[in-house]
Length: 316
Ligand code: C5P
Image (tube, rainbow, N blue to C red; front, side):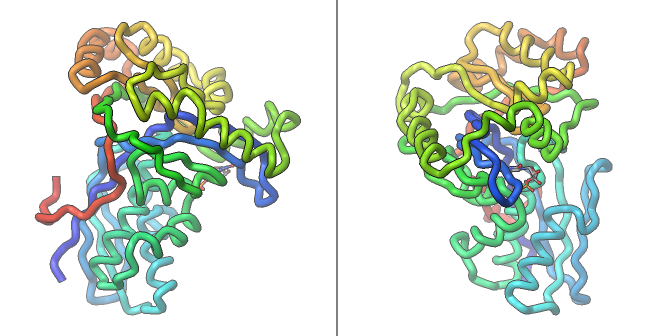
């Protein structure tokens, strides 16, 4: 079969609320996740020898069995009971690594969708959902994309009604020297506020309801002003990572942004703008400080979809 090309977009968290600790050791979360049009691209082809191989244009990325693309391929092949299937993946990496933008999860989700097509399995997204949730908490969101409420570990999705109406955009910052481990951020969160966690389903559901009916969802569905954004991991990470504090201050200094926050477990930061032109104007306004402080910056639109097959098969 011909090569299959898949686009894997990043996400930001518009809301990340840590509700409690679950019996499985994961945290119970209430989040709103948003796809953005900063994407990696995977080109997949079959191999004759049942090998599973990954190569990438990024020097920083492991390409062994710890990579979610390789894990996804192995798990999918095991699940359908066809050990003779092989694949070779070329990954064009654009999403910063270890940034809280779900780059690794999106690559893994893209591998599932791409291999379903390449290997002619015909499973479809619904049946890939369970496999995605086994591989990573953010992976089901990456499959679906758009604007979604994400509950449980992050894998229980509810679409946000009418969220696609506004063409918002982000100015995204990340310091290349900073990287945050997600397990570290959650463990630190537990150390700092473990006694204040909710511990029962009724209280969890009350918080979910508050989010569904709260000002953020109203603003996303219409033109109401965005409330200040909440990310509980920001208070955990910012005291430890100087570039997070500096980047947040820099973004807050920009007039015209709708809101500023850290994404996921960081250390990437973003300011939300009404449109791409406003985000680009803010980037120009900050050019000198960004260079002096050594930040990398991207302007991108908020997107309406998760991983997608690229019809013409051409890499970026
Ligand atoms: O599911 P994923 O592999 O992305 O999670 C990475 C780590 O982040 C977990 O091993 C866990 O330490 C932490 N985590 C958590 N609660 C969640 C999601 C992730 O504690 N809901």
